[in-house]
Image (cartoon, rainbow, N blue to C red):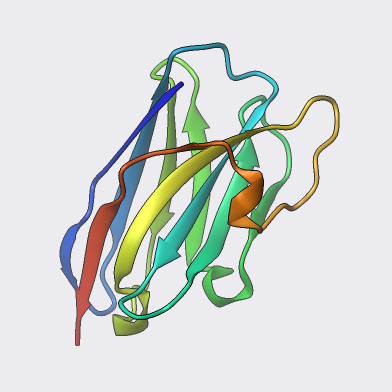
Length: 126
């Protein structure tokens, strides 16, 4: 399994950015993709997750109403659309995958994810 995160960059506060997580190496129908982020000097935090097969998405409280996770199955890519960005959103953003089987629930612990992309830096200037 390979995950390739991209789309980071410098954006002004209030702006938008879209991150991409390109997945390859297997069929992902029973997998979930999550986005995590890690700011300098801080722990890695859960941001959002979605099952590859669709359905309910989960978000951290600090991004609800601003970020949207969605997938393009034809492109084998999971996106994170980030709107109304704030300087505190500055972080390295990682995508990760875990096997869900037939169950689906919010899993915000990074140790539960088996596969990780390399991270992409998002910097929000004030």
